[in-house]
Length: 446
Image (cartoon, rainbow, N blue to C red; front, side, top):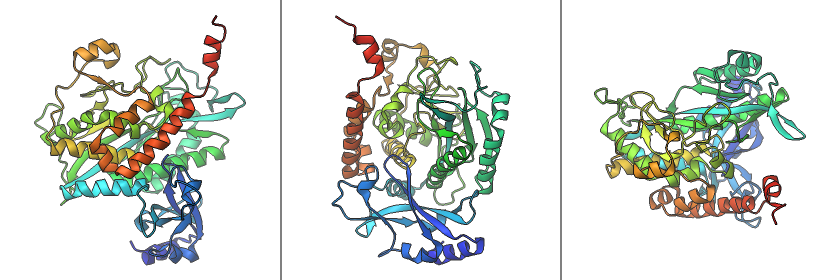
């Protein structure tokens, strides 16, 4: 679709306003609202929705720098189902007439093109998890006060009490053509997961960004908050965004290159090499799939109230085993369970794809699959089996990213340096904060 076709589609649907929407380094949507009569003002080389990068998270070094521009991808036309006079276009960030090195969507497009040049299309599904909460003077609490079961996973009554919100959200997703196939009450109180059908990775990322925005908007309308924080409560399970991955033939787009029905797990040699790459670069990629201080409070084996965190702690793959970092839930695909709901999904996907491609190019062997309960193995037992732990802090993950030339190259050296600097600043701010736990534990020490 070009701008003229987009303008005609907007007129036909009665759209009056459009969002030119990009994301910052956190994956948070940023936009300008533009009357549809000014759609031609968004066309490069001279047009775009201009903004000051320093005013957003990590998209500019200082207020002295020139403007950036959101340039819409006209194929991403999305009419807001709850406000049909308004549409959204996912956009790339440009500076000085070319894609900015800080544009995470452009980074994914670059790695995606490298895969296509090798004959591959990455199809990807995401499983978004979130809490429906309310804010109080003491923080947050479950929006549904009756949601108190110790093991609430799949609780029909918990879904029923939130049915109005969930059905409205699901209905809008169906209206957008996303093919929602299941929704469940997750492992913790007031936690939900909504699953929609996989598609090509860039489309999935665009949809995931819009999904979070839509869920948060609809939650606000009922006085709630859709919380995508990785670990809102220490004693409850965290919010993952597990990604399901498969490479398809780029020429036809119709052949799953990961599928081998003769294999024990239903995976081809190509898939095993891809898995080998994910394992080889797992600690570096964690800096993108778990990008916050809070992310690493999710990646633990300490049991929650429900009995398990369901989050990975070690660099390992297995079959249909949810204690693994990489799970093979069925033939022809692999699930990466490190990804959490706070990630910038474009950056996480770019890093995952780059790691997998490196595994293919070097024909890496992922080794023997693991069928054990990883949570039952201590550090010494893991070490004896040659299993590496995932980073336990954001700082540790950033150090791994800094030392990984493959992921650095895929993201761009200048981008990686900027990302690490910003995230280290975040780490130091956290590390320099004295918590109530520390006061309670240490203030009375002699």
